Picture 1 (cartoon, one colour):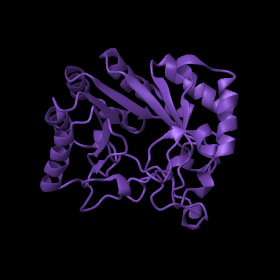
Picture 2 (tube, rainbow, N blue to C red):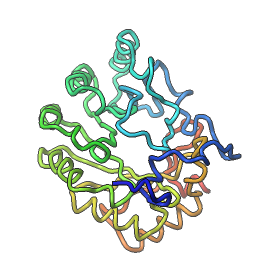
Picture 3 (cartoon, one colour):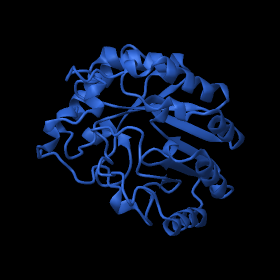
Length: 277
């Protein structure tokens, strides 16, 4: 649990508003990962030939201060209206990518029947489904028996969680992850490098080792996106590479995630070392 009385608490830094968010920074990018230019229809993003991102909602259980979609706020347009939703599903079925990533917002905010219905309506045109969610960490109660049974019955469905600090792995989170893994649902993790939160090789190594012990594979370590308002949390790419190198000296195999950068041109994630040139 975050300690709101401690401004340097690594969990509080991720979620509590900070006056520095109001300061403009020369590195700010309004669309830091280039989603807008890659959206053929509303609620769909396509950056790769073989896979498509489908946004189920703009709502989350928790609003992270560094998020590259932090401009998505609850309101009248927080969820697609029926017409927009049918258009998004129809576009995906017509183009039949190999994989669809369900994202948001957080796809586990929506009712379980709607989530499972989305998967059913994408099949058989789309074989592999990936769900990107922070809910098992921020609201583990969302990982219900009904959700787990529904995902198991619709395999292959992969779940990609988002953890940034070892303290996020509470007993409740452990139980939620175990429910997924015990049911045969493969679980991966994405971590974002954040100043004051995990910009330390000991913290990162501890997190990745803890995830592997929970049968969760560290998948990506993200260089911080240049979101307006998050400059105080950014870790520069050169420092990110040095941190990754330090972790790589201690960990290997399934415990070591790939260090990636998601550039603002919308081309999709690339190896951070290649991006630096």
